[in-house]
Length: 183
Image (tube, rainbow, N blue to C red; front, side, top):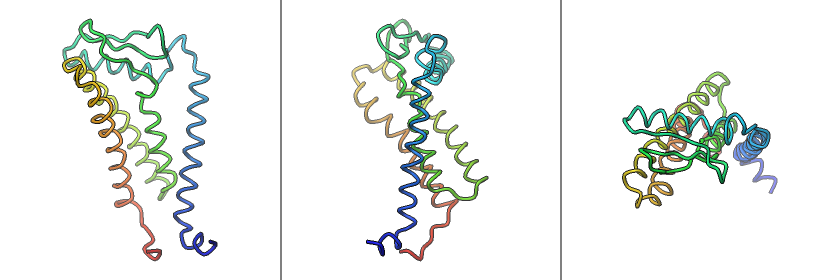
């Protein structure tokens, strides 16, 4: 067993670092959610921001969109042309996907400046793609409500998680030097 741990030390270090980073970042985010004051930004600042930016973009695309606080749950109702099409919940704000991405970047870090800039760029890209995803999903739900399940549970998760996977693969293949002696 000790020989295996020594042989795969890099892999074990990656896994443990990833898990530790993911747990720490998730706890920080949970604390943020627990202590966020929903009186000014409902349900929390980031979710509220994503909902309002979605409304703004939809209005720019010619739809009459509005977001209002949901009275029965911690979410924002998204209304297009007086039709309730979706709710923006905490899980829509991309923070959990960003935590996953950042955890990987911490565990597979290269030089500090390069890692920091790539991680920051990746976070901004994930946030922007997620926002575009919500806008397109909302338009899809407005025009094709009977396609709700496939749009929400298949197509759009593939977009966001597929992009994260591509960012990871690009990082691993372009910016890090994998020690080939362990192969």
